[in-house]
Length: 190
Image (cartoon, rainbow, N blue to C red):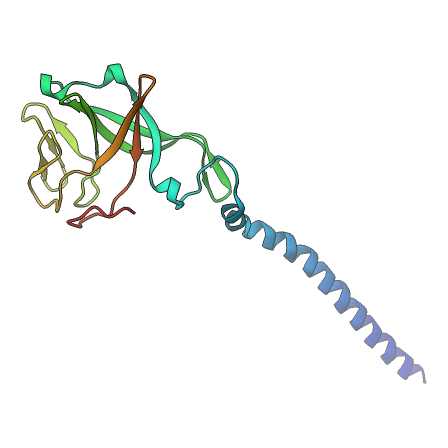
């Protein structure tokens, strides 16, 4: 009889132990699952002002790039201003990014209108420089050359420099920054 009671006790302890371990596992699994899915849930139900990476509003982020008084008149012989595109308040998974450099643009005035060209070469994504002596944009990676208007002159670049929407408000120039797929003849937003 003693052996039967001992066997029943062991079975009962196994059941109770299994229940306790299952409860403990569940107590750890629920918070872990909530933590792991936090960025996805935040993107779906976000009502905050911060833009979510990959969202429609993040693909074309309007950011201030310069004051209007800094923008040179290219028709008067001025050199285009290279301006950093820095966004604030972006979210990347769990992080809020206060100051994020997205890239840079060349900005200037032609016939009184503001223009902004992406400083990223449409061929392989290298940074384009401005050569003041030739009055051309030049990509140092594969020697693509572009006119002051951003039109392709020579080299392997498949298209002109990417023109970006630009506006002015209260003496500040804003650029609708956007990235485009590389090595394609047509501008295709990323």
